[in-house]
Image (cartoon, rainbow, N blue to C red):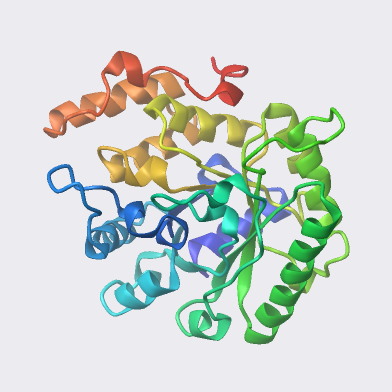
Length: 327
């Protein structure tokens, strides 16, 4: 068994330990951000080539620090002959849909509108490379839009089941305010998720969730609801400070998350391998989030890497949702 499956078994059985926490490197940014997802070259002002992005994938896989490498189908095909994920204990995964609310490429304004379901990747092509995929939905408290999303998700489940493709489910917060009748958005999302999955048989359910961290109360509620059938994971969002990264994974784990899928927080850090090592130290209570920032900066200086921010700036929590529980 791969370490991912071993960890999932222990989490479901109630024998979770902090070292069982699952970390995924989300390098599927080209599915939403286009060429700009690879970063912009400081000299030319142009996007870095795909080979740069894929080299970062191969380096992370070779380190064995993550449990899952999430990619676009084109990237999975490109690195399949050069980097054997399984030999390093890393489970490869492919993003299997890209609703319009993740279309965030340069000059685009799709995120100002409610998502429409959309899929490019063929499940049979992805299944030839791996047996794990990602499917994403967004709920808006809008009958027509939510029914359309749920019908598309139902069709996907049928196809995935027929192809023998396992998947995890990503649930986005809407990119703009929606009317929840005064109820907290995190609680609305919790209920939307549970209602969405209540009628789904175990054979067709996601392995785990990937969702926005909506604070301690919402996370604790969902994580405790049905832990054998509903393992909760958090997404990373924007790059933020180093303290944001460590604080997010610390609070997420403390209030019940058992998976983290971070993209920009890893890729746009000064040292992606060291940031993941530090994340694991924080999860395992070897070091606090603030101490991790100091240790991370010490590492950067010792290895000759220039920090993006000063130590003082990088120790700041800038995400409002994290400030409430930050120690």
